[in-house]
Amino acid sequence: AFLGPPEVNVTSCPNCINVTIKLPPSHLREQGKLLSLIDIYDVLDYDIMLKSLDGEHERPRQETTEDVFSTVIEELYPSRNYCLSVVVSASLNKNSVPSPWKCATADSEASQG
Image 1: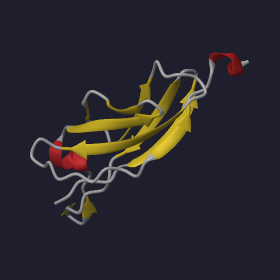
Image 2: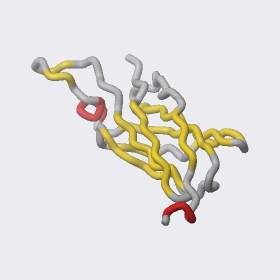
Image 3: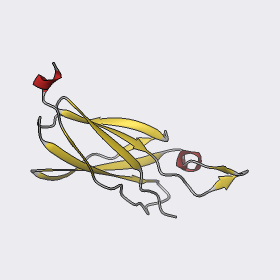
């Protein structure tokens, strides 16, 4: 079974990007109910690949126990465009489909009012 791709939304914040990640559905059912990946694996790892003008950076791997969660990528250059893709994997399942690339521009502090 392949995991993914997760659903990803990005919004900008001052010198950062806020990333909301929704885990992909599983195809397993229990008593007619579709199980979430968390129901199956308890904990999932996710990797965020970040692309900008100065190249690609893989963020440190993190884990989640929630179906929908957010993370903030900080210390970015203001007014610069960043694109990212998220891959979800489980300890028992390394077959992952990365999310489509999503892009956002990090806000500058000054534009916040």
